[in-house]
Length: 332
Image (cartoon, rainbow, N blue to C red; front, side):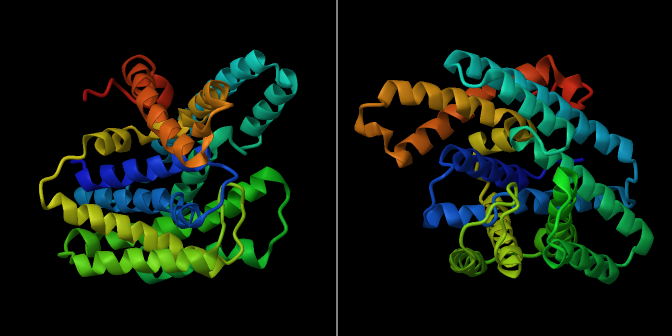
């Protein structure tokens, strides 16, 4: 299956937002509120978009759930263990409740809460299983979309949850909506000419709706205005999708974004442990200097995390590829 270059750019940009968001955790401003309105939904949206790309090439839906388990659940276990080990080493260095934090992180892995950002892999697996079930059951666009909307409404109609597994299921119901829209958007985006006016409009509306929405966080299950959240998530996703689809026509090359986008799985699974070490080093180096300004810190650590990520990507792609569900090393 041919890679879509503009999709790698979208994923790369989304991953940079995710990294930056985790660096500035606790800081709330207009920019943070804006990209938090779509920086997680965009990955579910793109996953649905890519599933249609595969379906469109093969002319049939791949119902092999074992393959999805290999490429999502196996990395979930691998990256969870990776993060537990790395963060335990960090906690030993700073003497910070080592045993307690080790137990808590191990528990998070087994109750499907996820260690750091690995929760996304469990949620995406659940979403794919649900969508393929709906597709096999209905095979009708209207009924699939209606069912996805109903499922996405459940977490806001029945707000009580029973432990982390039920929270994960609720988050997956919400994510299914973005995945479904992404799947059925493929033909409309891929085959049509995109104007700059449309792109500007989408970005403008994305900013406006994010301001109306306010602070939100799907990972922590904090969504105050569900309708606005769904709209904002779609506006942000379509804005970047159409922007990079348009820019692809100019034969541009964004090598860093392409690289991060191609390897977004590894960046997703490892970046928070890298951030933890970098923040420790950054604080020690600049504790008494003005450079501790959160904006400079956010940009500096995001860039450093992206660069260190290259080394981690090479290790996984060349030596540990079996542990993340790949058959052979990826040749860049």
